[in-house]
Amino acid sequence: MTSKEKIIHTVLFELRRAQIEPWTPPPSGEVKELRLPPGLPLSDGRQMSATSELLDAVYDYSNMILDNNPDLKSRFKKRDLYQLAARSFGEVLQSIDLDQTNIELCDTVKKNVDAKLQEMIGRHRQAVQLALGCHLLDGGAAYPIAIGPVVFETREQWRSRMELEDKLTAITARRLKATWDGQTLRKRKTINEALDERAMIDTIGECPIVCTVSTDGLSSKMINEKGLLAARLAMTAISLVWTNPSLALSWMNLRYDGQAFRRDYILFRDGGYAGRASSISQMPSGRWTDDETISYLKSYQRLFDQVGEALNYYVQPATSAVRPTTMNALFLSLWWFYESCREPSDQMATTKFAASMDALTGGYKAKGIIKFIEARLGVAADNKIMKDGRTVRKVVTDIYDSKRSRMIHGSSDSFAHDWSDVRSAAEAVGRHCLIAAIDWLANNPRSDDIEALSSK
Image (cartoon, rainbow, N blue to C red; front, side, top):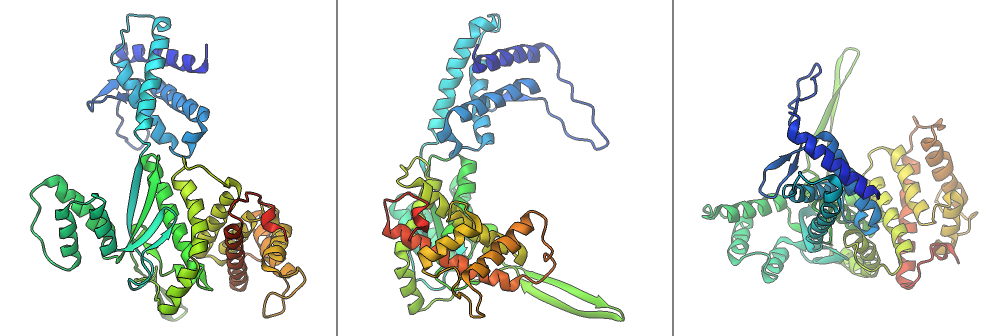
């Protein structure tokens, strides 16, 4: 018997057991917990009696489907696929005749479960747009900004486009505009329409900008996880226009990630109160821009297009990948760079900036980063790269070996020191490496050779 057949036999055995053995919850510990009997979901909202072992078998079945279909791994989380499998088993098992033997039922159950599961998986092969309110750049002159599947628009641009694409009714579009203009509106008569409208207002809130991520073929949990990361990485790409991306990113925030709030603490020393300190969690508005900044943004569009290609593979996995190796490297480098910029700890940020540079070299560590800098930035290893006279070799070795590697492997003797200067150097060098890599990808649109990225 195949492994699938073994699982089906277990399911049938446990289904019979669930029909004749009354469920008793396991004994509670010191803390009382609400225990509910296990069940398989049915299409009408009810549940079929099951056992924990039956549900475990269904979970094994869904994992087997996932392992045998690599394309599903980039589209579904394990929990998402398990829920579809549980529904498939529930709908199939409710109509079988348990007077038949397992041998008689096995092939039919397997065939029908697979067909039902494939039908449910197929329903997720559709394009879905994730919309989020955000702060990015002040003013409306820079918009729209497109980075592959991610588009940043003013609220009015988004509202008009959504109405034009028939994703908003004329009434909803009109009421959204009136709400954003400060008008007080009457309640809508239809409850569903009122709930949909409220969801849009709550999502965008006071944010002047809407970020839209176009996904395709993803489960609901994957849309949330991948869509949010794609939006954050698109913001990171925009922050590269500034010489200090982490500062620029402090002005660029998704409403989903929380609104700005005050952070306070007070100090005491011998003798009593010594003072207080305050800060805010993020800047309360978008990054200030002028005509010169907008000009810079437009000149970076060819670089944004490369980032957009990498993001597209991520949120639309069915897209045919022309250069998966280099795009994966770019995606991972940008991801580490984003994490670095948001990281409050100088030590952790330095470690992450090192990982961002390492991703562009195929994982050849400090030696690979030095080679990359020589090839893409045109600065020899022993040439000065910092105003204080530090060479490329000195800077990279300090960032990667002395700081990153020893920090990760638990052998750092400077973790309690001030790493702010090292962090600043890591961010500056990391930014130049990312821009140089993206520029090379723009000039070599068909190359998928990660080693060529570090070759002169």
